[in-house]
Length: 216
Ligand SMILES: C[S@@+](CC[C@H](N)C(=O)[O-])C[C@H]1O[C@@H](n2cnc3c(N)ncnc32)[C@H](O)[C@@H]1O
View 1 (tube, rainbow, N blue to C red):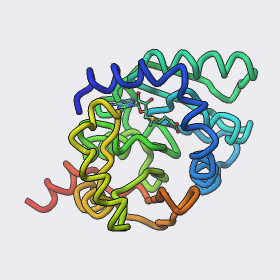
View 2: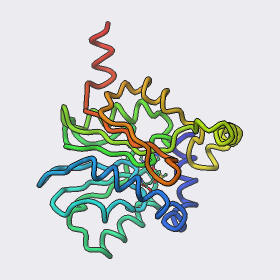
View 3: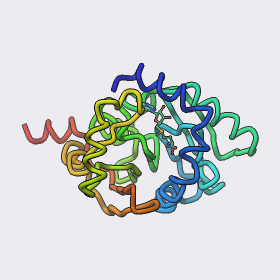
View 4: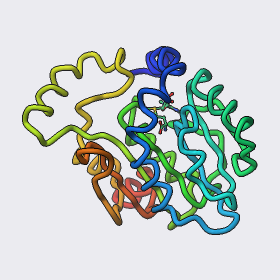
């Protein structure tokens, strides 16, 4: 799925996203924010922030930056920030999470909620999240991964050719994600109804490029 297909898909979703994907996936967002254990004044980056459904879950004492590739999704997030007077949301920008404009080591925590199965290159996403996160900071992911249930897993494989229209990869594998990204997980736990999704918490180890250079 390329960036253009993603923008197109989420332009269609923006108006109905909260209704369809709000409540049902909120427990996963809540777990992700809780696991961050944010301290006073910490800088948090949420990539693929979408319509800002997580905003109400963050403590008031942090500084939250949100980015998204979809202007339409971000417009809803911006309206939410204004409506709810969220002074802890300090920046919302249109930006590609695989190629961010932030300096190295800019954030204490970096989180991607339901984004890793959407971006064109998940390993590149993780590498960029590592770069902008401080060494030994926290990287958090929440996502649906390819189901182990034979019936659901087969269904997900069958609909995977329509990823561009769906706006995500339904057959996104947890094992492959962990292997390709080289994440050092400190916690992996099921979240949401029927354990439909998984939260991965990781310590910010070295970037892929640094690890490859070290191995060479
Ligand atoms: C399934 S939605 C998740 C939105 C939000 N995180 C949530 O919890 O509901 C995926 C979001 O990732 C965004 N996205 C996809 N690829 C992206 C990229 N390369 N850079 C930034 N955002 C991206 C989409 O525009 C969309 O808003």
